[in-house]
Length: 114
Length: 112
Image 1 (cartoon, each protein chain N blue to C red):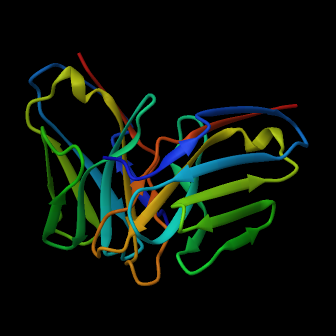
Image 2: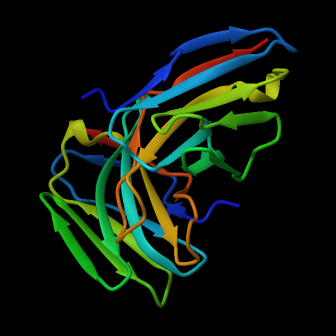
């Protein structure tokens, strides 16, 4: 049982390049989230999904797109990377909201845009 | 905007002392959770307290919730150097299918 796995762990991009971050969970969770973490800012929600085929915007969605074609995978895309997107990205998943459930996090992807 | 706001931003204590962190939030919630993050790692869930609960314990952790003041506190008793980490509160709002919203965290340093 791997939990939540993020790929890649590290990446350096040039401004204007594109990339996709992959998040995979093996717990059959309904909800999946993408956060970014910057120094002094805590975790800010980029996009989230409440089920296969559905996505929604979070607090800081601009410059990112997501897809949830399969229940176990949640992809985060950067179409044209900018230095402001240099950050650590975390994916999380949780079962559902019934009576509150804990979120499980991946180990993060450290992205640098130069 | 972020829901939770932890206080203090940073806390440094000696091993064996107790550490108290506070979290304030803005809207009505279903539950509040505390997470821990070791440097360079993902977050790990510590404890969840529901809106109809006032206090909860788990090992050396004690969490309180005051919904009238929209605040929660996390107490770590008899702290250890291994407790050094950042601690975040997160809330599930009552409005429905809302995502888990995190605060900015408290950075705890426990000095041996």
